[in-house]
Image (cartoon, rainbow, N blue to C red; front, top):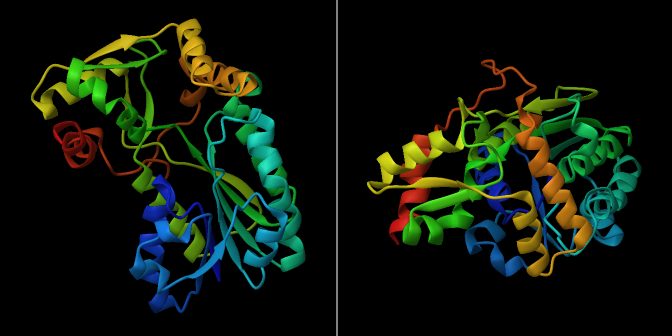
Length: 297
């Protein structure tokens, strides 16, 4: 039995599709934790067991982990809480429930940066790494998917790209860093969940096929979208003001600002890309398959 948290999110929906494809041949049962079961397609609800509620709730994870062998763990974004509350606080009930229910393996969505000089002051990433420590300390075999920023983050700027030909971030325009498609993260998670021969705790970097700078992204988008797209660097103070204006918790906002500052300082650059850590989807492919339809819609 595999339990999937956040099954309707960017990573979870890709993962669930992969597991549904593979589970029958492996006689693997699937259970999902979801706040609103109506968000699951009918064809999915017919093939999985559904536990309704938040996976940050002790009673919910107690039901969901009963009889489970493995868990896919993803903390949903919650900008109303401090970073530590949003990651470790949310995860604590699940970490306490794993061993009593005999869950042997957990795959968690985390971040790059462990061991780098800026890891201890990287805001949301620091909180995510602390969540990894909590889960690995629970006694289960644990794999933290150590991810850089996602291609899908650009979908938040679809309107700006369409209407103004502009996207923004706070990093230097020529700073190259790994980027990854969420579907590739899901594929790595599926492989780990289906083949549970691994033991102990470790991180599994998922780095995409190449490092790219914002200027590289602008060039590819210009080519693939058939219209000029440029990068505009935003000041950290402006980012902070914008996020606070949207009503986010101030400590959570500082967590975002610190993470962005750390990324501009090389947070994601500490792992060498190898055949094992690379993932296949190129930015060119992602723009053609995902961003272009969104921009042109």
